[in-house]
Amino acid sequence: MKTKEIAAVQNLVLTWYEKEGRDLPWRHTDDLYRITLSEIMLQQTNVPKVIEKYHAFLKRFPTVDKLARARQSSVVKQWQGLGYNRRALNLHKLAKIITSDYCGIFPENPEELGALPGIGPYTKNAILAFGRNRHVSAVDVNIERFIRRLHGHGTWPEGSDTAQICYNFVPEKRSRDWHNAVMDVASIYCTKKKPDCETCPLRTICKSYPAPIEPIVIKKKERGATERGKHIPDRIYRGRVVQVLRERSASPDEIGLAIKSDWSESDREWLEKILEKLKVEGMIKYTGKSWQLK
Ligand code: SF4
Picture 1 (cartoon, rainbow, N blue to C red):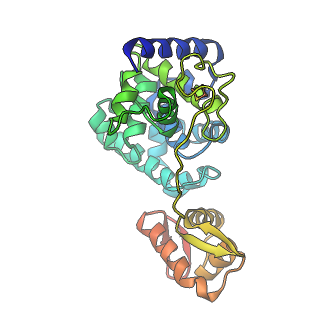
Picture 2: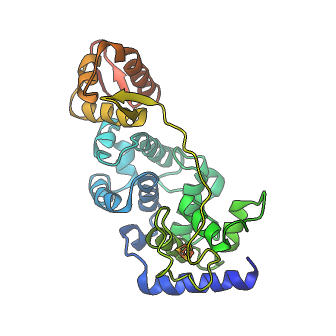
Picture 3: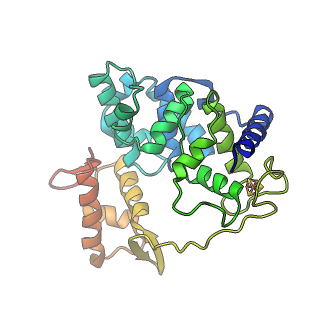
């Protein structure tokens, strides 16, 4: 898009945001601990669930120091309901590094921030944009979809640098507002499955209006197991294992019976691989008789 068109997009998005933007708890703070927590929670969990869990987590671990001093199993227990439990381990490791190596103060240097556990390129830039209004571009799948659709079908320059194109849209002095606004537009109007082009604030400028044409994406089947004729991904079983161990320690057979409704001896090898992987990740441990949270 040309500079003039980009300026028009910025204007429409920010004007809409001032009136209609969502009021989310982590938008009322510039505390990097709280912003990091919200970003890690939002990586794979939807906003309503994160709001509920965010407050509860902060009540239990109000500061990075309190989190660093907590037992790992307590953090994993507090993560209940959010899924993808490995995020809890990373967050705990991150808190320990912040307190031991940075005197409890989050680094604001992108390289140091990006080297912390669980902080990928998107999360790093999101923390800097939301926490410090830094002129960076945080590009997740929703933002990329929105920016691509603005350009219209078939107009995305071949071999182009997506990060650079998205960065061109970020207003220099309003990075925080821009990212908040785009997140909202992408999740309220420009949704993946049912974009609401008729009421979208960008409809006058969007080259996909009145409806985007989407490329066909063939999804690869995730590794998993068949349960009563249905394919269930291993990540779901991993979550179920952690859920069982949040409540009690258990033998492999007890775990198998609890996580798979048609559990049988033939599933043992498959379960052992899941348990072993969780052990290698530092989530659980084996005492010789039973498994428990580490
Ligand atoms: S007009 Fe439709 S495709 Fe374009 S930004 Fe709005 S919702 Fe997305």
